Amino acid sequence: MRTERSDIENFLYAEARLLDSGQFTEWLTLFTPDAIYWAPAGNDDIDPMEHVSIIYDDVAALTKRVERLQSGHAYAQEPASRVHRIISNVETGAAVTAKGEYRVTCMMLLIELARHRQTIHSARCEFDLEWHDENWKIRRKKINLLKNNEVLEATPFLL
Image 1 (cartoon, rainbow, N blue to C red):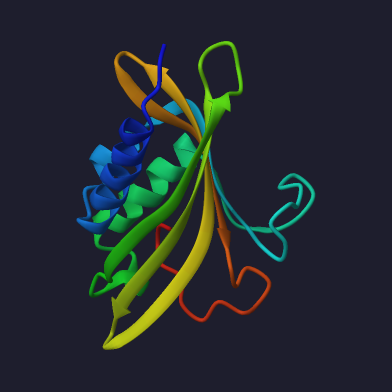
Image 2: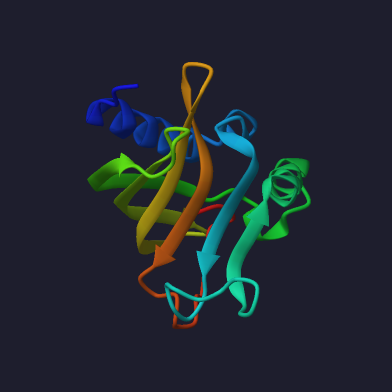
């Protein structure tokens, strides 16, 4: 399969748009059943089995996170934050597995407005993408926050 850089970029932009617009159920469909969603704490290259993470969710935990967000019982999100993500510096590599899995990195700038306060989060994101049924799917998303070794006064419900 020949991969076009623009197809991968468009996938990343679409993922950001789903998150920004609160379409979390649709966003969950972008993940493979065995996917991991990870934001390390303290250092970008920790072992999540040995160290604390800001978020380390499999699809079941991610689904519960979304359900809680949509239930009206996520009091930290009352009222819901307004967010904009800017995706840039997309780098695509060669396939890293025979199945056509690609490692993709990008920079993300997330601007959040919550309770009349604007917060900016910067991160380098890593995606392992697989091609499934004529669509890209996320097998792993790792969000390396610039401030992951400092106190996070406000963290969006989903990065």
